[in-house]
Amino acid sequence: MQVILRQLGDCIIRRCDLADIIPIMEINMKTLPEHYSDYFYESLLAELPEAFLVGEIQGIPVGYIMCKTEYGFSNFKKLGFVKKGHIVSIAVLEGHRQKGIGKAIVEEALKGVKSKKCDELYLEVRCSNTGGVKLYENLGFIIKQRLKVYYRDGEDAFLMAIEFHY
Image 1 (tube, helix red, strand yellow):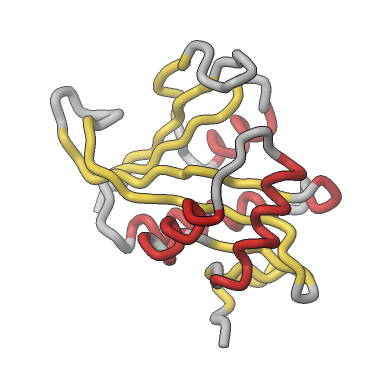
Image 2 (cartoon, rainbow, N blue to C red):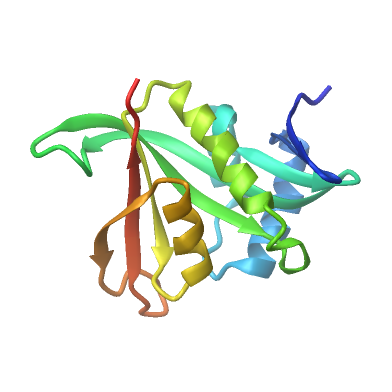
């Protein structure tokens, strides 16, 4: 039985299930140029199920977010080595955008990452994705760096991060 983390109109936000991997891969293929193996999705689901979430309408996934945890240099503290969350991928199908689904998914993933006692959460976003950048800024993320030629097609990315204070 699935636990609903949040309801947003006819959309429910819940944890991903193994059965969701194929539909999530299909959302990824339709919306993003970066693709991953089924094993990669399964490994992230096993590692951090608290922040691998699905937005679904009438039983059909329309969006997802997947995160992982890692240890590395802080995006905020000089010389700080911290536990941090990383939003690896997030997508919402075209016909379901601008309805708050992406925002709700990120907000619930933030809770999942915090539950693992991470010090911060970061992501990379295309510089051209003004809607995404604005969404993350509205949630408290800060642009920390521009990553030159980050994507395979040559586009730059912004590294954005948010620091948690417990």
